[in-house]
Length: 415
Image 1: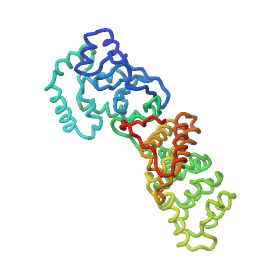
Image 2 (image 1 turned 90 degrees about the vertical axis):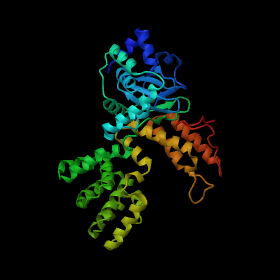
Image 3 (image 1 turned 180 degrees about the vertical axis):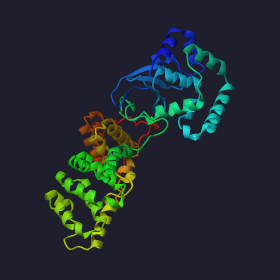
């Protein structure tokens, strides 16, 4: 991660002009800044080093990574250093059209895409001699388009959560450039899946450690929710006993459901004991079958609760399930970015707050939940955004003020 090539461009006007045209990495445009004030959601510094003729801007982040932001409200990391970014824009002058490509697409498809784009460029101006001259002056090796596409994709996948760009005034997130990466739940469940695998191996030390740690216990139960192996009943009983220490949680209800689904009436005393832990658990599990219930009654109860609250698909879970678990694991930036995008989504489609069976009324719980989550993260600007929307929702019965400005991946100014 160096800026050797950047120093050469700054020292040699001829090379800087060649980088600006035809490769659209223009140092002079840095003085004009971006089209609007921006900041990173993570709070890190940004240095503007260049721009392009579409209004896009190249920023250098604290670790040297280069974040590219276009003028339409999308951004992404495109290199681990300025040198790597310059290799990209020189080697692939049509790189903006390749952000969805992957090495998995195969060499033939990648080379065909690059050839088509560069043939179109050559109809307007030359790039081959200019590319060879600039590469030689900057000391860059000749790399294949396939390798450069692979580098670009790897860089773009590093954008979230550390390099998400926000509009500085409104706090709305820029859209992603390129691939979205793994879903939040996949990242949150990784530790729980690992613990679940070790529990299945029967290591009693792991049984004790995972069960006694409230966060590990919750995540392991969530992992078990989506990986329902037949041989898990004993470890589920173990986790259920320990989850009562946290009183009435969604995970306690989940543990009871996963045990109840087996239909073993021998588990009724354990389930009833969990229900009678305290007043909150007695209320939260009040519909649990009573002593003497049949296996069918136990399974019917568990299936109904599973269908209404849980299920086997992690994408069906509310976003708050995953942001809470991410925060509890110390994935603060991941939780923050997800919550910001959720708030942006509600702002841009406020019909999401309409109650399905009573359209004139609005459900404000999502906004109050977002405001609370931001406050718990110590992130006050988006908390205030959520609270302002909450005030609007509480005061408007039948309609919302819809956004009139074109959506560029950001919200409109909230008056």
